[in-house]
Amino acid sequence: MADNSTLVLFGARGNLSRIKLIPGLFHLDEAGKLSDAMKIVSVGRQNISQDEWENEIKDMLENKFKGHYDLKVFERFIKRNIYHATLPDDSNAFRNFAKLLHEDKQFPKNFAFFLSVRPSDFAKIVDQLAEENLLDEDKYWRRVLIEKPFGTNLKSAVELQESISKHLKENQIYRIDHYLGKSALQNILWTRFTNSILDPIWNNNHIDHIQITNHETLGVGERTQFYDATGALRDMTQSHLLQMLALTTMEKPKTFSPDDIRVEKIKLLKSIKPIPINEINKYAFRAQYKSGDIEKEGHVKGYLEELENNKSVVETYAAIRLYIDNPRWKNIPVYLRTAKRLNQSGTFISIKFKNKETDQKLAFNNWLVFSIQPKESTYFEIKTKIPGLNDSDLRATRLEGMNRLEHDEKIDAYETLMLDLLEGNQSRFLHIDEVKAAWSLIDPIIKYWSENLEKVHQYTAGTSDPKESEIIFENKSQFWRKGN
Image (tube, rainbow, N blue to C red; front, side):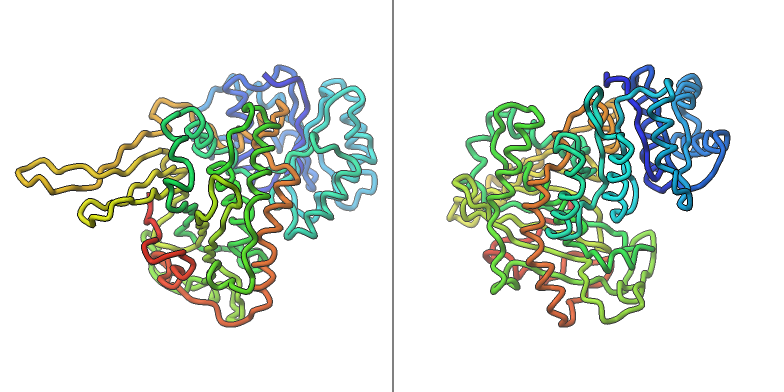
């Protein structure tokens, strides 16, 4: 169990807090993971009463659990929660807030600050916390969790780091990527390194290529302005997909301690070769969805229609080819792709093994697939004989193991990460060197695309990967794996 501590939620009345954080903390309390004296201080910019806040918490839990929760735990959870307003026009807001935390004996003095706020406010809040002596670790630990994104490019990430590192040591900073809290993603490490049958074939002698995929049927919705300033490559590839790549291809750490895991991830990310910009069209592909039909939604607008700006070249589909410059993965392509408004949703890692048969009848595509969502499973695809009189009739057979069984505990990624924050486990959070390595890879592509204003390829909403995206494949035998 974590130390007695006070968790401070900035942006407590925002969407993330309502849907994920408050219900997640309640679930941790229900599971007995929160210390008896732990307190939760919810900081908001609106002046509401404690009673109003407790009623809002009740509504959040009702929406999440539909009445299926322990009332005794609810009463205990409510007693943990205190609302505090920091009004925008109050020049003494942070001073009063600090006085509350420092002097009120009900608050344990180990402080964890969760910044669920606009990225432009990260550095400002850290400055204010430091000014009020809320980050000093002379007697107690102090931690700050920063929501994604950490910068919008390498330059801004470095500037943000320089600003907050004036007040925080690296072991106090928790840069969140919620994908790293997913059980199915963490399963990759344990599957790779606890099953001896995989290690001999986990290299360029046996693997043809790797695909890392995140596809959605959803569009950008009401986030058009945000998305047009971001794009698929910056939104998904720079963070989630590169982290998935690192877990899939990193070397075995000395131990499974947070520090040793991070060392190997950083080493891997730094070994990825930059895309040659003079040949970028062979290594990177972008596109936007146009109007089409989505199952369960019907006819939907195209991205440019939603944006109401037909000049945008921001991508809703991004695919890139990368190479890892180390002995294990030399010359093996890794393909990363992410998209909005395709015909199916799913996140999965597909490892394609080399086919060493020259006889076409015996040739077959063997795959190992880590399915992250919508279902959590790991499976091999092999070739087997079809029962019958014809000895040469063969078919694909899936050897699948479900990572999550019906009776398994269901834990949301944010629950895992909040517990890690309280326990001081940084293995599922990003080190600044990981952030810098990721931006260093992605920045040149973003720069080229932003400067090259030619019309972006259009794909119809509700269809599969654009045929034109296959231009990034190393050879004609490679193809996009469809679904899980």
